[in-house]
Image (tube, rainbow, N blue to C red; front, top):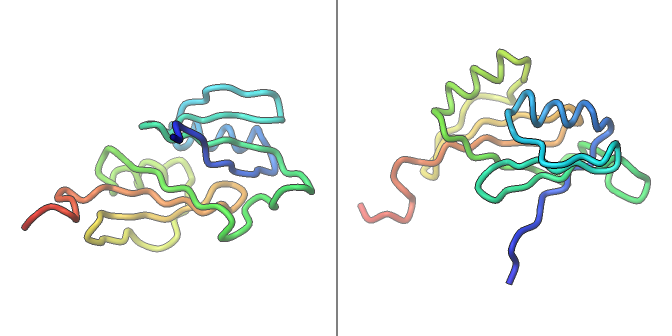
Length: 127
């Protein structure tokens, strides 16, 4: 029934946002329409739409209004170190839970993002 879509992130500066999601996080820019819209491919069918701020939409970086979860395919510790080398500040330490490991950061507008390294044994797997 539903075959796609995106998570829309309202941004204060399209150039800064596009640079962060592509050059810093390493995602692929699919299309960009000036300062009106950009689509970023986050892999495995997950698309992020970047939309400029406007009085008719939520303010960029509004806490709780948007959170992005990005699954990593390398050890989380290595990804965190690589992003720290690019100036990314993380919120707290890596959290390890049954479902995997998580690290929290924010984009330039304060939109919460978490990186997720899937647990090596799925939660639903028999033990």
